[in-house]
Figure 1 (tube, rainbow, N blue to C red):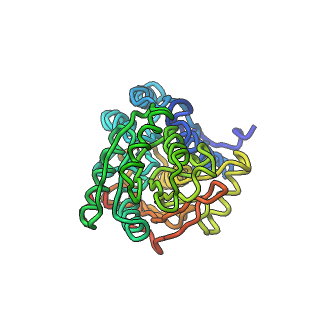
Figure 2: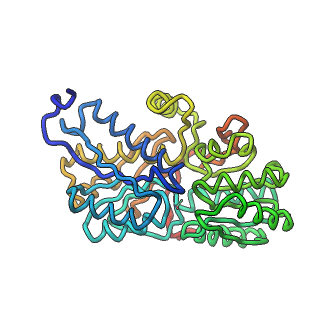
Figure 3: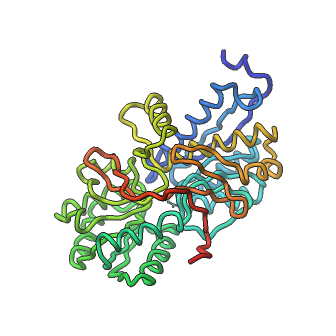
Length: 373
Ligand code: ACM
């Protein structure tokens, strides 16, 4: 019925977030953020009178499926813009496809940096927008002895390399560095936690992602360790992973992120209310939902201006554009295709949210190659 109000063919966009597999816990929320923005845009009449229609596939947390489905979107489905990817391995797989087919991938996830593609808009944090502040905060508040743990793929290995370097320059000490498979189970984390307990670090820096995040934090609690004196610190443990592990298990642990549900802006209060109305009162927002949400609005504004989805025409309009996102005012950086974002440190509370304990007063420019460090 609503379709009758539109004055032209729909704008078709691709959406690639996993609803199954090991990272579905967070990717499913990115899908929701994407859909909420699309629904809002359509409720306002679409873009230049044309409806936005998502073509949604489930890549099942498998990087080969991401590449195959991205290719299908850009060829058989005739789409040129894709919103998608959580893991850096899936982004790297899609990067090759969007570069070959001249598509545009919008990537709403923090990552390890050291990448640039003219076919990607990066709306999650680069390491200078989360890891640097986190290292300083942890050293000031908990101590110098770190243990690094991660899932076994590119983002954890590269993020830990950066953390190691930041710590080295600040007289921090790395006591150990271990990786577990993305599919690792509770018992693997129990064994790992025994090893960590023996090493007695001040901080466990975790780049474990997805389902396994719950096993890591549960193993910490079961080993009788105290988040007040030996917290797990992360860039990816959001409200979604805390919900998976249980608020009691997550309480006291530390995350650095551009966005938490607790951000006190009027724009965020309204965003959180709309999100809960659409997906349920018990559903928290998180940093990945927020980026997935605002990037669709940034896209739609650029599309309204240029009125074509041709990548070569749309991209220059996107670069330099600004938006009042739930986290605060953001801008897409013209040089790097990354985003000016806010930096915050949160401590998980008893009810599954985060108390913001440190906050940048202004957004910071992305420095994906850490040129200024
Ligand atoms: C990630 O793999 N960029 C979380």
